[in-house]
Length: 144
Image (cartoon, rainbow, N blue to C red; front, side):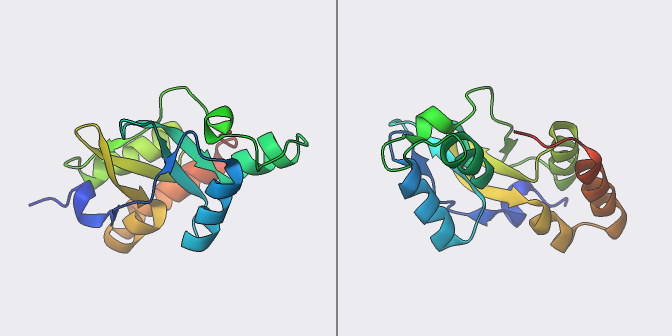
């Protein structure tokens, strides 16, 4: 049986409410030692992702106050790239490569249940596909 996203994801991913301040998001990302986290609305549905890059460029570099800027003001509101809990590792690799992302929220129904990162895939995938994934993402322009 092929391994699925739910088998290799980091479960129970911390999410940040869209109405939280950017400083709250930054502190939670620092505590968890990760560079991105899902931002969810009051209904628990994924609205977008906030990244350390978003905070650096859209808040700090723009001279805004991270204590007053809300997560909702910083995240990209275009459709967030996700993967289903029962999707295969091959599908995760393909999605990361096609969308130039290094991590994917794992969705079960409408809820975020975990995250799959390049590192998660590297731990379980054959050497060649992960090398191709890393190469494809490294060669692509930065994804803002």
